[in-house]
Amino acid sequence: MAEKHDGRGRVVAAATDGACSGNPGPGGWGALIRFEDGSVEEFGGADPSTTNNRMELQAALATLQRLAELPLHPDLTLRTDSKYLIDGLSSWMAGWKRKGWRTAAGKPVLNQDLWQALDQARLADVPLSYVKGHSGDPDNDRVDQIAVAYSKGRQQALSSSTAPSQAVLDSAPVALQKLLTRMELADRLASGGYALTAVELAQLVEQPLNRLSERQGSWRWREWMVEPVENDRWRLRRDPPGSKQT
Image 1 (cartoon, one colour):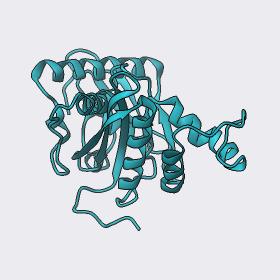
Image 2 (cartoon, helix red, strand yellow):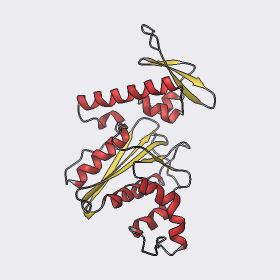
Image 3 (cartoon, one colour):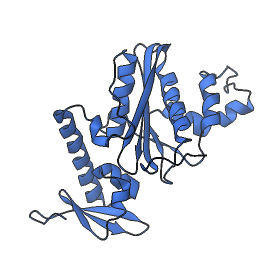
Image 4 (cartoon, helix red, strand yellow):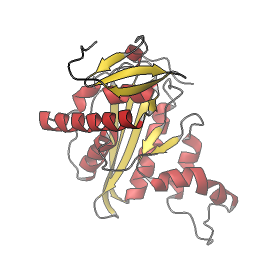
């Protein structure tokens, strides 16, 4: 049973990544989970001789085991850039199990120990979702930084469970790059007329989900008006220059 936690609220976002120098070679994995109050929890690990795929699986395993201890938002997904992980859990595993953990070619499944552990740890209400690696997604970039640091044996400053999400920013230039990425994404979302869930909007504007739930009607975020639409979703619209921020 998920534990009643300390006021951080439910987990609203989760991301994982793996890295390896040499493949096989020294590897690392990184994970990040965000809470409704805007706080973030980061963790990771290393293996002196491994593969990139094993690190992707280990990151997901550790994250699912952690999520099992926490209250979860119903829109939560586990975001990863590993199609190997997604395909394995969603498509391949059923066949492997029917064949006694062998592939269609009759060979033993690689990384069987981790796949079996993932089969036990998977959460029915937390689906996996794919995000393209190195595409400017802030959480994917962050877990990649953690994984790479562990793979290279470097000390990585991880955000504590009660630190605000902004604490993960390493320097002003990095912060500005991430802000630019979010603003470019906001422009694409506005021009395409896409509707966002509250969880997705909270990640975009970097505000706690519980603060967004207090919003009534339309409000302004930087150059965009954020407008409520049906089914508890939000839509961005470019705000004319000179409009007053609310």
